[in-house]
Amino acid sequence: MEKKEMLYEGKAKQLFATEVTDQLIVHFKDDATAFNGQKKGQIKEKGKINNKITNFFFKLLEAEGIKTHLIRELNQTDSLVKKVKIIPLEVVMRNLAAGSLAKRIGFTEGKLLRQPVIEFYYKDDQLGDPLINISHIELLKLAEHQELEKLIALSHKINYILSKFLKARKIDLVDFKLEFGKTASGEIILADEITPDTCRFWDSQTKEKLDKDRFRRDLGNVEAAYQEMYQRITGQKWQ
Ligand code: TMP
Image 1 (cartoon, rainbow, N blue to C red):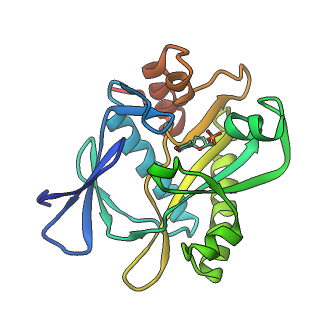
Image 2: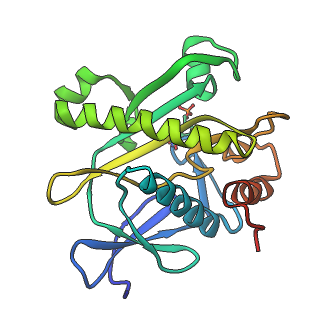
């Protein structure tokens, strides 16, 4: 599959056109940012690891009946995906208090939430991706009512599948972010990525952080954490 012009460049990925109109190539970069781009850096081999971890999770979810944009992996850092119109929402699911939730409602990091918490952030760099509610989503016409219901149900199902899978690998799925897209025929499918950039993964026993918080909070051993997550998830040694 030939890479044609670059259609979009985000903080951690690039999207390219292909010779097929409804198929795109996603390229995962080693670049890392935090705090809406204020902190910048690189995480060695992150592109490869995130491409492979995303594809592993997307295949796992497909096997459980969740539709995703993945068509196939093309090489270490690139995958072929279905073209979708991204719904400009970051859907965050949380099982334990951490990060912005801990700050917002005054829970200590690591407190088990009685039930999973779902949040929506409006994908708008200029506004700094603010937290919004269902009423705001309807006002801004970001998604129709039934689309939103589907998106919420899918997010809960994904949380259940991933939490169970990771628990068996001695990882707590603390929280994570999802993005959904709409196909030309109007179907809502999972898009974007599921990686240590977009999830909080803690070792179940030691509570060691094995995700991008190591970069955000300058905790060191960032690369080693990404490699460890690759190994825990796929059961294979990293190279
Ligand atoms: P938060 O606690 O900072 O709101 O983050 C919640 C989860 O969402 C965490 O797993 C990291 C992920 N996330 C992203 O993927 N992209 C973002 O821009 C932010 C702020 C968080």
